[in-house]
Amino acid sequence: MDAIKKIKADEVTIGQSLPWPVYDSEKSLLLKEGTVVRSEKQLAVILEKGVYRGLSNDECVAEAAQLAERRKKPSNPFQMKNICAKKLQQLVAKLLSGEEVNVQEAVGFVTEQVKEGCANHANATLAAVHLADEQSYVTLHPLHTAILCQLLMRRLKFTEAQQDTVIAAALLMNIGMYELQDRLFSQAEPLTEAQSREIQQHPEKSAELLKQAGMDDPHLLSIILQHHERIDGTGYPAKLAGANIHQGAKLLCLADMYAAMVTPRAYREPIRAQTALKDIFTDRGKSVDSHLSQILIREIGVYPPGSFVKLVNGDTAIVLKRAIVKKGRNATAPVVACVVSPRGGLYEKPAVRDSNLDMYKITGMVEPDFDEPMDFSNLWKTS
Image 1 (cartoon, rainbow, N blue to C red):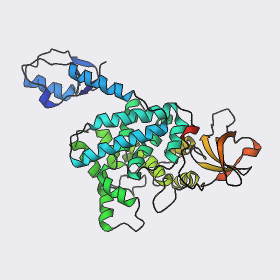
Image 2 (cartoon, rainbow, N blue to C red):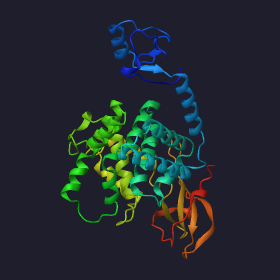
Image 3 (cartoon, rainbow, N blue to C red):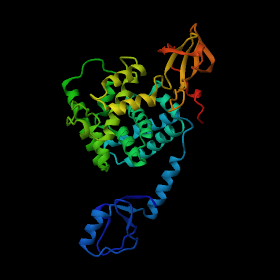
């Protein structure tokens, strides 16, 4: 079937033939192109049941051009992250200024990149979440959250449509407090009363901004409205609990929480992945979904890619690949690359090691002390 889009009331005129075919909500053909709409009753049926239409020739050309642009894939997930972060930054700026913008196109581009990275370069994409970046938190956080959501959804066997909706929600969840979030990144003082109110109201404000921009998918809006609700009913804005919370919102809540913890702030170092996962495991069944929490821990691993570890031989290494646990098979240990010698000097060429071997076993996570930020992206050969 060709690409389709929702029908708007002003696109159908009584007495005129349809310039495109009409489909029902199951995407089955209702009316062929050229069918003449002859009555108000027939028009009402089309608007009620024929919620999708085919694309005109001009729209097909534009769709093909957009697809060609999306296929210009970045060479690795680190490059992907930077390109997508800039795309999101531009999108949010236009949304907040009231400028006309094609939200679906921008979100679709980023969504495709996130899905491609998670499908083909999962370890490198996960590493990109854990390695510090010079871009702003407010730009990177939704992207990191979207990546974590996608990794979980692949394991949970979400449909493609469900994946697209949750990723879009992750990318757009905080536009209602974009400027405040940027200030809070470097604020060490307690929240003011006004800031607390703005935070409490941001899910509703985000949903409203998206509706004004033409994003009217009820699942997308529900997930955004509910991504700060908690299983035990202590969340906001509606204090929903348990089964009353959208499954996509439960997943987004968990990914949002983890991404926030492992990202450094101006006033604190990042929380180590082990500590973040331990806190989430302890909190399971209270504010976060118990089943999803366990899946997150299995998916990320105790030593996720991009984290730094100390080895038995004294080396400091960066994790390249997660441990793999498969039913009926022995678990593999993480693959690491040694970057700092026991004496503290940087290795000119990091050596890849199997941490399953006795001399390279991992003793724990560490925070390396580099004089300046380093680019480790070339350790993942993804291009």
